[in-house]
Length: 97
Image (cartoon, rainbow, N blue to C red; front, side):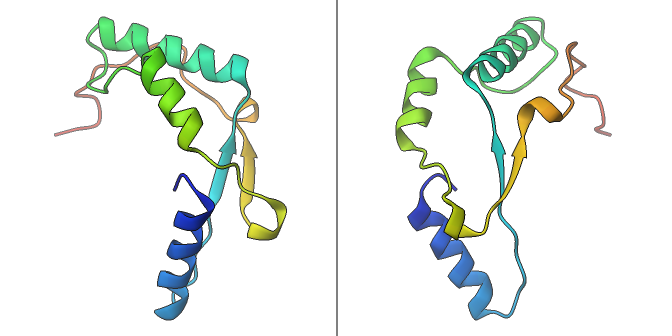
């Protein structure tokens, strides 16, 4: 959910149906984001991932579209630097049957 408007719409949707929900925001610094995109691109090039590549154009588009959650939105914020991220790829078929 990229914008506040989208997050508010999701909250209303679930509230109207009596469903509890929580939005979690993974806050990531520029350096860590760049590192993770670099690792992702490397894994794609090696055939370890079937994901799409995030080039500079897509990265800029994402940055322009995203509105960081504000305090009154009641969003759980996690710091990317505190969470593990694989440094080596794994076959795209891993975990599938």
